[in-house]
Amino acid sequence: MTHDDFLSLLDAHGSDLTRWPPPARTAAERLLAASEEAAAAWRATRAVEGMLAEPPRVSDERVGRLLAAVARQARAAPRETLLVLLFGHMPVRLAGALCAGLLALGWLAGGLTIGPAPSDGVLLAEDVPSLFDGGPR
View 1 (cartoon, helix red, strand yellow):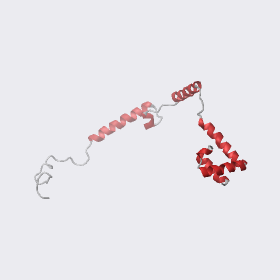
View 2 (cartoon, helix red, strand yellow):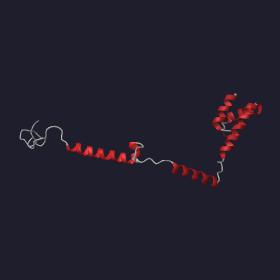
View 3 (tube, one colour):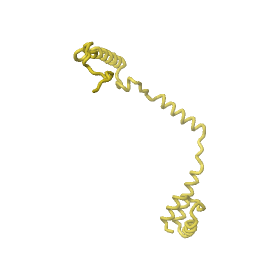
View 4 (cartoon, helix red, strand yellow):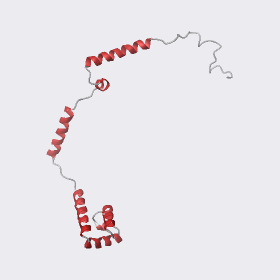
Protein backbone atom coordinates (compact mmCIF):
# COMPACT_ATOMS: atom_id res chain seq x y z
CA MET A 1 0.00 0.00 0.00
CA THR A 2 1.35 3.40 -0.93
CA HIS A 3 1.18 6.43 1.29
CA ASP A 4 -1.39 8.10 -1.04
CA ASP A 5 -3.57 4.97 -0.97
CA PHE A 6 -3.40 5.02 2.82
CA LEU A 7 -4.45 8.70 2.96
CA SER A 8 -7.36 8.05 0.57
CA LEU A 9 -8.61 5.15 2.68
CA LEU A 10 -8.07 7.17 5.85
CA ASP A 11 -10.27 9.94 4.41
CA ALA A 12 -12.90 7.46 3.25
CA HIS A 13 -13.12 5.18 6.30
CA GLY A 14 -11.70 7.18 9.21
CA SER A 15 -9.13 6.25 11.82
CA ASP A 16 -10.95 3.18 13.15
CA LEU A 17 -9.22 0.41 11.21
CA THR A 18 -12.02 -2.06 12.03
CA ARG A 19 -14.22 -0.15 9.55
CA TRP A 20 -11.74 -0.65 6.72
CA PRO A 21 -12.07 -3.51 4.23
CA PRO A 22 -10.05 -6.54 5.51
CA PRO A 23 -7.34 -6.58 2.77
CA ALA A 24 -6.74 -2.85 3.17
CA ARG A 25 -6.77 -3.13 6.96
CA THR A 26 -3.82 -5.53 7.10
CA ALA A 27 -1.83 -3.46 4.60
CA ALA A 28 -2.60 -0.29 6.60
CA GLU A 29 -1.43 -1.90 9.85
CA ARG A 30 1.86 -2.85 8.19
CA LEU A 31 2.28 0.69 6.80
CA LEU A 32 1.52 2.25 10.21
CA ALA A 33 4.23 0.13 11.80
CA ALA A 34 6.78 1.03 9.11
CA SER A 35 6.04 4.71 8.30
CA GLU A 36 6.11 7.57 10.82
CA GLU A 37 4.47 9.84 8.23
CA ALA A 38 1.47 7.48 7.92
CA ALA A 39 1.29 7.17 11.72
CA ALA A 40 1.26 10.97 12.09
CA ALA A 41 -1.58 11.28 9.57
CA TRP A 42 -3.49 8.54 11.39
CA ARG A 43 -3.02 10.30 14.78
CA ALA A 44 -4.15 13.66 13.33
CA THR A 45 -7.28 12.07 11.86
CA ARG A 46 -8.00 10.35 15.18
CA ALA A 47 -7.65 13.66 17.04
CA VAL A 48 -10.05 15.44 14.69
CA GLU A 49 -12.58 12.61 14.98
CA GLY A 50 -12.29 12.85 18.76
CA MET A 51 -13.09 16.55 18.69
CA LEU A 52 -16.07 15.97 16.39
CA ALA A 53 -17.42 13.07 18.43
CA GLU A 54 -18.77 15.29 21.20
CA PRO A 55 -20.31 18.71 20.58
CA PRO A 56 -18.82 21.62 22.52
CA ARG A 57 -20.57 22.61 25.72
CA VAL A 58 -22.02 26.10 25.77
CA SER A 59 -23.17 27.60 29.04
CA ASP A 60 -26.65 29.02 29.45
CA GLU A 61 -25.10 32.35 30.44
CA ARG A 62 -23.24 32.56 27.12
CA VAL A 63 -26.41 31.74 25.17
CA GLY A 64 -28.25 34.45 27.09
CA ARG A 65 -25.56 37.03 26.29
CA LEU A 66 -25.70 36.06 22.61
CA LEU A 67 -29.50 36.37 22.46
CA ALA A 68 -29.37 39.74 24.25
CA ALA A 69 -26.79 41.02 21.74
CA VAL A 70 -28.96 39.87 18.85
CA ALA A 71 -32.00 41.61 20.37
CA ARG A 72 -30.01 44.86 20.79
CA GLN A 73 -28.89 44.73 17.16
CA ALA A 74 -32.46 44.07 15.99
CA ARG A 75 -33.79 47.07 17.92
CA ALA A 76 -31.01 49.33 16.62
CA ALA A 77 -31.52 48.38 12.96
CA PRO A 78 -33.59 50.89 10.97
CA ARG A 79 -37.00 49.66 9.94
CA GLU A 80 -37.80 50.04 6.29
CA THR A 81 -41.41 51.06 5.70
CA LEU A 82 -43.26 50.82 2.40
CA LEU A 83 -42.84 54.55 1.78
CA VAL A 84 -39.09 54.30 2.36
CA LEU A 85 -38.85 51.35 -0.02
CA LEU A 86 -40.88 53.15 -2.71
CA PHE A 87 -39.63 56.72 -2.42
CA GLY A 88 -36.33 56.43 -0.57
CA HIS A 89 -35.52 58.68 2.38
CA MET A 90 -37.55 61.73 1.39
CA PRO A 91 -39.60 63.80 3.84
CA VAL A 92 -42.95 62.24 4.76
CA ARG A 93 -44.96 65.30 3.63
CA LEU A 94 -43.31 65.28 0.22
CA ALA A 95 -44.00 61.56 -0.19
CA GLY A 96 -47.63 62.08 0.86
CA ALA A 97 -48.06 64.94 -1.60
CA LEU A 98 -46.55 62.82 -4.36
CA CYS A 99 -48.97 59.98 -3.60
CA ALA A 100 -51.94 62.36 -3.56
CA GLY A 101 -50.84 63.89 -6.87
CA LEU A 102 -50.48 60.48 -8.49
CA LEU A 103 -53.92 59.50 -7.22
CA ALA A 104 -55.48 62.67 -8.65
CA LEU A 105 -53.68 62.16 -11.95
CA GLY A 106 -54.96 58.59 -12.16
CA TRP A 107 -58.51 59.73 -11.42
CA LEU A 108 -58.34 62.41 -14.12
CA ALA A 109 -56.81 60.04 -16.67
CA GLY A 110 -59.49 57.43 -15.99
CA GLY A 111 -62.22 59.96 -16.73
CA LEU A 112 -60.84 60.88 -20.13
CA THR A 113 -61.97 58.95 -23.19
CA ILE A 114 -59.59 58.48 -26.05
CA GLY A 115 -61.06 58.44 -29.55
CA PRO A 116 -64.69 58.80 -30.57
CA ALA A 117 -67.38 57.54 -28.23
CA PRO A 118 -69.11 54.43 -29.56
CA SER A 119 -72.69 54.91 -30.70
CA ASP A 120 -75.33 52.88 -28.94
CA GLY A 121 -76.64 51.22 -32.09
CA VAL A 122 -73.42 49.75 -33.47
CA LEU A 123 -73.52 46.54 -31.48
CA LEU A 124 -77.25 46.04 -31.95
CA ALA A 125 -77.31 46.37 -35.73
CA GLU A 126 -78.88 43.55 -37.72
CA ASP A 127 -76.02 43.24 -40.20
CA VAL A 128 -73.37 42.53 -37.52
CA PRO A 129 -72.90 38.75 -37.24
CA SER A 130 -72.59 37.17 -33.83
CA LEU A 131 -71.73 33.73 -32.49
CA PHE A 132 -75.32 33.23 -31.43
CA ASP A 133 -76.85 33.62 -34.91
CA GLY A 134 -76.46 29.91 -35.63
CA GLY A 135 -75.80 30.50 -39.31
CA PRO A 136 -72.82 29.42 -41.38
CA ARG A 137 -69.69 31.47 -41.14
